[in-house]
Each structure stands twice: as C-alpha cells, then as structure tokens.
Length: 597
Image 1 (tube, rainbow, N blue to C red):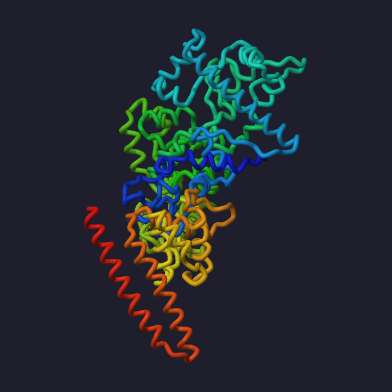
Image 2: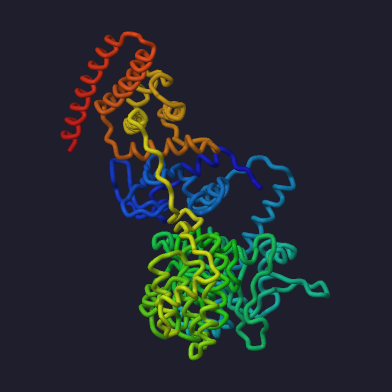
C-alpha cells in the first residue's frame, strides 16, 4: 500500500472546500461570522447541533460529541481509513498525491493497478462513443429507448456498447500501449485454448461497474442477440474488480441518499437508471448478486434506511428475505416498496410515469409487515390446519418484534385475515418464543445512530473552552494572550492544556490539523474551532474570557489555602477585584457588539 508525503496531505487539506464537502451530507445554513450549522449526520436530531468552521475546516456536533477535520469527516461518512480519506479528497479536489519511497514490489503493484484503472476508463469511454456514434449500435439504442431510458440519463451512467468484432478493444488498447496481459488482467479480454487473445465483451450493452469514487472497475454486459448466452455477463473477479463488493450507481446516488437519509435498492441496471431519470436519485443496484455483507456496509454508509424495490416475482421476494438476514446484523431500517406482480421499477416508470413510482416509494412498508403479509398470502386460511400452519410460520417473525404499536398492528392484521380473536392470535404467536427486546435504532453507519451526549463541562472547563475559542476568533490578539499566560496554571486539566498548546503553536497562520492518532485532541480542537466560528472578534470579549480564567485559577488557590488552614483574606480581595474587572470587560464587549450591529 502506498504512503503519501506530508506535503501531499497539506495540499489536499488546503484544496478542500468544507462547505462543499459537508454540504453533500448536511443542509447547511449560516449561524455565525464563520460558522454554518445543520442537522447532524451522525445521530438523529430535530434541532441543529452540528456545525462547521469553513475557514479552519473543522466540524463538531454539540449533541453527540463527534468532531474533527475534513479527513475525519470523510472517514466517518465514507467508512474508510485515513489513507482512504486522503485519496477520496485528493480525487474530489484534483490534487496529485506524491508517494513516499516504497519497496520495488509495492511500487510495481501500485503502478499495475493504476494502469488497469486507466485502461478500464479508456475502454468505458470507447464503449460510450460506440453506442452513440456507430450504425451497429442502432438496435441497442432502440432497445434502451424502448425501455423509456433517455440519452441524458444513459450518458450520466456512461452506458455503452461493445461491438461484435472480436478485436476492437484489443486493437485500440494495443495502440495506446497496453499489453494483452493487461487486457486480460482487467477482465476486458480472454485467451482461447489456442492462445489467441480476443475481446471478452461483444455485441452487448455495457454498464460500467464503479466504486464509490466513480472509478470504473468492471462491466455488466447485456446481450443483444437471442443466440448469446448468458443474457448478462459480468466482469470476472480480478486485480481491481471483486463481485459483491460494490453497488451499481453508488457513486452517483451517494449525495442524494445522504440528503434523503434513505437509499433505494433495485435489481437491474436499467431499473436504477429509470429510477434516477424519474427523480429518485438515491437509487442503487445489486449488480445481479444477492445482497452481500460488503454491499450492506456500503448501504449503511449511505443512509440509515434502505428501501427494497426488487422485482415483484418469487426470485425478488426471496432476494428480500436474504437481504433482511444480512441487513439484520447491521440494524439497518429496512422497508419494502410494493410493485405490481410481474413488473420491475423500469417497467413501472415507463408504463405509469415517475409520479406513480414516487407514490409507491412513499408508501413503502416496514420489512416485517411485508414478511407477515407474504406468509399470510401463501397460507391456506380456509381451514383450521392452514391457520395453524400460518401461525407456526409467523412465530419466528414475531419473535423479532419488540413490544410496540407495530407488533399490535400486525397481530390485528393476522387476526383479521385468519378470522380469529386477537387475544388468541397474540398468545399463540408468543408460544415457544422469548419476548423480543427493543433494539437501538442504530444502523452501523454514521447516519442515525443513537449516541450518548458528550459529558457536560463544568464551569471552569467551559471558561477555558470559551477563552480558546475567542483566541481563534481574534487570532492576532489570541496568540498574544496565549503566549502571555502560564498554561499549567491557567488550565485545570491536561486535556485543555494540550488543546491550548496546540492552538497557541498554530495561531501564527498554520492549520489547526491534529496529528494522526490524536483523537481526543482532534475532537476538542474541532469543538473549539466550531464554537469560534459563531464569535465576533473582540478585544474586550477576549479580555473578559482571559480574566475569567484567572478567576477560576484563583478559586483553586483559595480552595487549596482553605484545605491547608491558611488565611484567605487577601485572596478574597483579589477575587472581588477580578470579578469587577470581568464585569467591565463584558460591558465593553456588549457595547462593541451594539456598535457593530
């Protein structure tokens, strides 16, 4: 794995637009001279407690205590490590990363991977051109139009066409100095028994399979000829593509899903494109696989609620059951979008229009209700034996539902369909099962997880935090104030002393970025930075906060003198004088505020 230079990290940080970055997840509004706020993406809340300081590129939530810099924000929202966040931001803001010297084998592996990714990007662009410019692709264009898919949406997803000739990609890639070995390694070519290399994909509509950053890793390919088998052919596992790790369209749907706090899962490529075209841009696809642990992790990083809009056939319903089993380990909120029998999302959008699909999404039901209705629909409820069998099949379902209004509603549904007394149904469903325990509403992802609020600060800690925030709000004056005081005497905890030392060392113009691994320091610095964003630079306000530090330090001195049985008359006199000076400074600060307004 490559290691990047410190200079690369600094250039990436300088390039980040914090409002743009956080704005993909949070609807921000101005809340101070250098602060913007919105609903926290890391826990459920109705009143904004999450803020950013765009100048210092820091974020902090006063509700859950999560905070840090741009790299930490990406780590939390994208589920990557620091290196992954660095690469993500470098790619987003167009910064070239410089690699620290690495051993020859690692450097060669990195170069090979970069070559394969470049080859895949070039091939995707070739397929797109061939779809729209060639006469051979006319039937493919007609097929896609017949499914109601428009050119703009198809171009956004970079849908293309692989020509029927056995060597079109092969020849074009060779001309660009790529080798046959690289073509095979990227999954774009195959070798026959006689040793000849030929294009793997021919006479097929091509759907690029991308990672979360939009890099092409492979392709899903739909056959255009009735004689072609299989109908759908995906890239095989190779050095860059691994089946079941990614979701189709996740790179495009990520920001809309974050804003909606929901992500819709469809089955096929055309379903996803049709949903996006209909305005449901928080839709992703399964790439023709059963939902995997890796895909669930990707969904959890995108949103806290997943809506399953899978085909309304037996296979689609079984896919939902498998999805629920995998998703249960992540505690995702799972809902089902009901589709007419025999239809898929693309059919529905084409036949009934975008609004019809939107209404079905809005009418989605909790997965547990879907499962109960599925069991009832499959049961023979005309006989006592059939009713008993249905109750038996539903017991494991109800064992997972904690005492709630939902449970009572579903018991009433079963009673109504079986024409049995609700009390009897409830008792029979509970037989042989343990009562379900209510689970937290978390989802294993940053969004929506329940969290304990950060520990409340005592008066001294609040004063220390506010002083440091005021120093950041007025950096020139703040640096003078911090240089002039004794950090050990002025601050009551080692945590705040370290924060003060970090800020003092960087008020000369350096960024507030904290070294990797210093999580506690990074969080308190982020909190101070975001608090500073709502403050107005004020000499008088800074003086008041500095004097308040002196007051709390004096209180500690008085307490120590009392414990030692020493006189405190002189200390009390100094305290009275300090209190008076704080009042005067606060009055001047208030006057400055009125003048500024």
